[in-house]
Length: 488
Image (tube, rainbow, N blue to C red; front, side, top):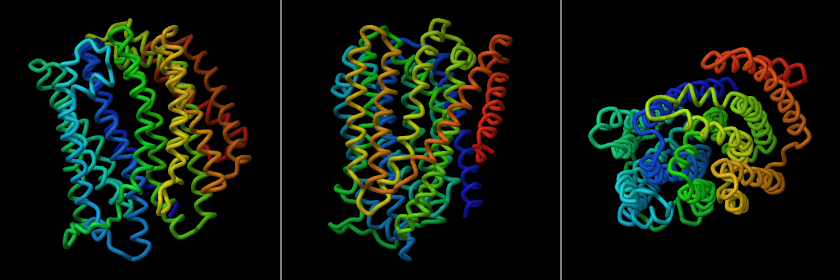
């Protein structure tokens, strides 16, 4: 089982990283063609729709609800297509209604998210195009959850590739004619490609239902979905805080925040992909009441994610200006944009550990037959901390204050989830995890010193790549020497 999980993790990481690299190319093209101004701010406000839909109906609530549902069905000897018959019709109907509602209420949504936006009409146009992703992302997320529950990970991993291919195709071909609207249309196309990329595998491994079930009772109920949705929306509401406050700052601030987060979140994406692969196993352990196996699985995930995140965060802090300059400072993206984005990314990197821990710790709450409300409450507390701190600090420190408040809020949520999880779900060993985290943190600090020294004798792209290699080697050696044997 361990070897199969490792193979699945490797396949998932490789394919998903390929899609994420295309996402980088996408961001590079947006920066090159459009820079960071009021137009890109308008597009990013519209992008709030798919940014919210993706965690809600692809990687977040949909997966947390459906992976355990399909896993329980398999544990009980039922066919996955029977679950499809009982759930898919209502899911599709709700998603279609959501897409139509966003299209109709787009002007009010834009005004609510970013009241100080320089070009609200452009944001409304883009929002109506991106509203289609509620339906397409939802269907793609449903298919992904069903496949992952049956331990098929290759096809679900392609959704990032398919999504970014659609965006890149329209940006590349239509940017001269339609401007930033071409990017919004590409988002809509990318959502449709996410579904198409998985359909052959879904038909082969899960299959269409023999008949559609339209009974009043459904395996997917509002009561089961509500805590997942509230949790996911509360987490995504951090973006709403960012867009709302950023719209009152200098034009381009929202874009700087977005670029900083996109670059900084790549290592977190890699780390959480490990948990994406292990989540079906964790769900089956819980369903079979294998408490010790579930505890070991979760502790292993926490140690792995900690190792990946701490060294990545140290690297981002040390080489932020060089990384942003290398990736984005082309065409309309200026040196001033690089400086502003790098300053934000350095602050944001300190919150990456909290973000990653929340991604791991929330999962055990959603493995039972009835999802727990505790993660939603914890996320609500963290969101309140985020909003209050941001409102107090932004007038004095601008964009970096938004990143700092984000990190503080998500860290509060991570602490609450850890405490709540030990009391309500799985009692992990704080002593063991704390010792591992302390050793890994020390190794990351030593690696950061090595990175700073390397940066003093190298410049530009050489500094980015050589510095990263040096930091990784120093981190691995120091961690291993301090007793973290699993760093291999």
